[in-house]
Image 1 (cartoon, rainbow, N blue to C red):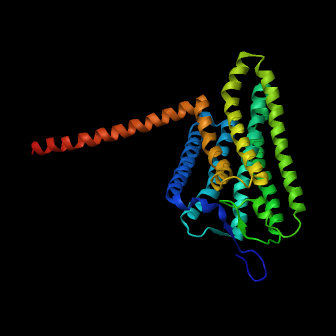
Image 2 (image 1 turned 120 degrees about the vertical axis):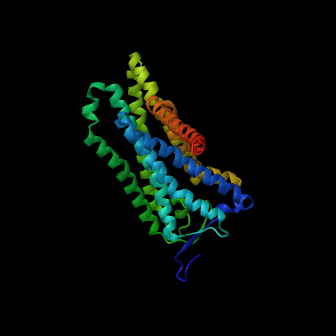
Image 3 (image 1 turned 60 degrees about the horizontal axis):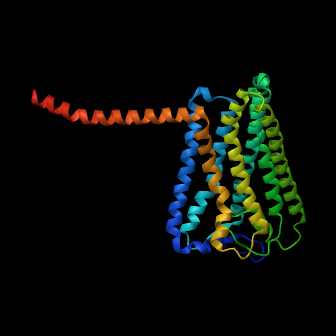
Length: 331
């Protein structure tokens, strides 16, 4: 998969070797998973957009979290479904780097939004009288821009540095391209990539520490009043569940990528490699949709309205033939 000068033009994805015997089943599950991600995230986004009562900072951040779930799914699932049906699973060098950027910028944006949501809950519970002045429209816009600009800037730096490496192989032992797998194929020193990788990891560890500190203050404040405890349970518990969901998935991926055992079966390796692309985008909107009262009630109301309209349409269709018969009999 290289030209005469030794520059890699294509990568082969050897992780698909274990999927040969059940491609059709995996393809069906992939489509089901993708449509499920689109459905649950779009449902929450549209609910937030069309309900004026949900035009609050917390719900706006939640809508952006769901939109990011759609972005990440679009960067992985269509290509993955195509590879499942292909006889040879190869991806171009440029396509590989684009996939690296899309997948990992999605994960970093996810985590950054969760940090911003933790800050929003901290202000709402610990400084309730200042909430509307602190979380102004301008502040929300700035935070949302930072949620996208900072992660994508770090990913541009990572991908740019990786693109400068001279590679000695074109075989990636995964179902998709990731930065570490490409870096491992380098012929020369990867010290700069390692240093940048550690800086990025440390940066997101600081994100986690910020969330931990904010929740330390949140718990202290919530324990002081009944209203504080109610707010904490209603609005902070779904955030904590989502944070645990994303953090666990990321830890599995980092540990597998860097320290994965060669004794693992290929099927287990494949699951470890894609689990962070499956669970967070499905579970995040489901968790918030089930726990947040405003969203749950609104979605129940909308589903009842849709059901009522469908029933009315069915009744009208049943009535109209009878009316036609009566009209004919009077002629």
